Image 1 (cartoon, rainbow, N blue to C red):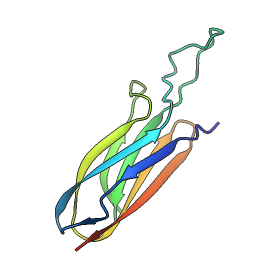
Image 2 (cartoon, rainbow, N blue to C red; image 1 turned 180 degrees about the vertical axis):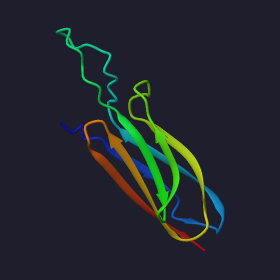
Image 3 (tube, one colour; image 1 turned 120 degrees about the vertical axis):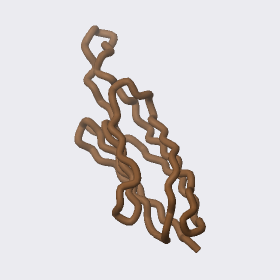
Length: 109
């Protein structure tokens, strides 16, 4: 059962060569820990985004393993140096096997 997570990413459209830019990502996801119970007393199955990665032109920038204690709708903000024009690829991995991807291009001039 897919969680229908929705990723959002903010990357500047332009940067100077070697400039460190700020990247912001948010994925709308309920992040159920597997430790709560529903109104009938049944355990609600764990359903979290368990990994987040970001690559730039095929090279890894960040790779994060997420645990059940992370909040709903995980938000990440980080910096990356951009040596050349290219594309960032963001990937979120869900417990249910779903993979959510988003790409953003940046021009270095």
